[in-house]
Length: 439
Ligand SMILES: Nc1nc2c(ncn2[C@@H]2O[C@H](COP(=O)(O)OP(=O)(O)OP(=O)(O)O)[C@@H](O)[C@H]2O)c(=O)[nH]1
Image (cartoon, rainbow, N blue to C red; front, side, top):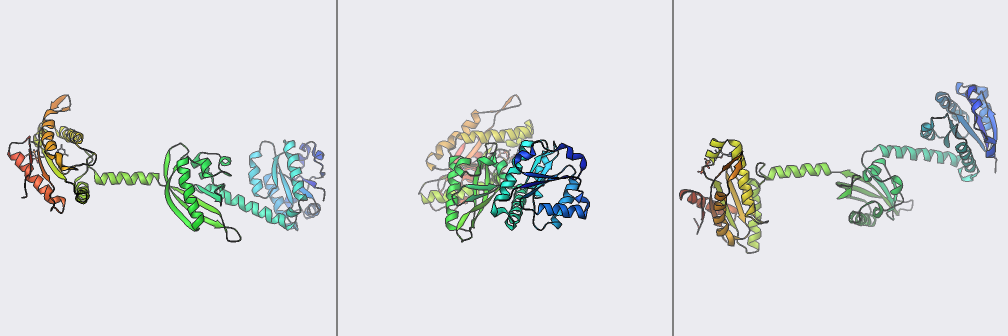
């Protein structure tokens, strides 16, 4: 095996005095090549340096004191050398952060000039790489190129704001981008080499695992909605986009996936749905939604051969409440009635504000229609509204009707309830009338 020779290439004479101590201890033959300003394109120096670097086992140590000079030297050498040389970047003290940039430029490693131990380690590793026949020659160029491509690919993935991951065919994470690390709030080393059961709560991990199995069995792509526990511990709504990838023999080798957070979209959608379905003042259903749901409830009740009743009520002399106490008092009264009404209903009853001071109820079971119809006006009369330090009394009139077997929609029952309400008003308000018979 060829002995590695470190060719120290200094571009500036002033830096040669600060050589890492104990370099010879690395077992490498060190050849100093001071004052060769190959960055200036000095043809003689360039040829001499290239000649030394083309010897088996030669490693170039490039002094990076002057970044521009170092880059120019690399460009000149690349044009001159028959094959790429292995080289280390020797960084001035305090500039360790530049290391990554030099790896991207093809350095085998980049170490600080004042960290002798690191320098010697890097030199030894470089030597070991040179003695590995697989990595010598053209294969080294391929490997270096691949390494640069992987770096570039990872940098691109890390720039994408959506979390991205890859897993092998056993569901073990093999890669991910920075957004995925940030999204889960786990360090990369707690993700790579692990499975969903290590990174997610059990009930979510089961969902992902089942989806993974289906995807790997069927191949192709998969898109599904799920939840992910975010870095702050809260659950987020997401869409997973996943696809399998194959090995050289066409067998499924794993899957790559991306996560799109739809939490905000879902929140807006549910807000819009709520706005479209409810009365903003009382929080009750609005007229349109009430009619829609009443129709569904009627159909279900008919299917189960159950009776359904409709109740309508409105506030007596509500105009006077507005006129005497103001519109805000009127609004408070509407909310007060909504709350009183809610206390008399069961979970599957529908309750809506269908007009200015008009409310409607669908009772799931018609048996207690008379009891509810009688109770509500007296409860309202007995429960004045506390508003602005005063007690405001009010009354309601109520009409009720049972949905008949031959009612095909809720409209005819509403008409009968309305007629009963009219009758309650006519009889002097503050009372209820239950419609008997067809009209
Ligand atoms: N504060 C308030 N008032 C409303 C609202 N919507 C409608 N109104 C008022 O409700 C009142 C309804 O009056 P009317 O239909 O004449 O009924 P009423 O005064 O209750 O008379 P009777 O029903 O015959 O006892 C009107 O003065 C409307 O301005 C609302 O959202 N807030």
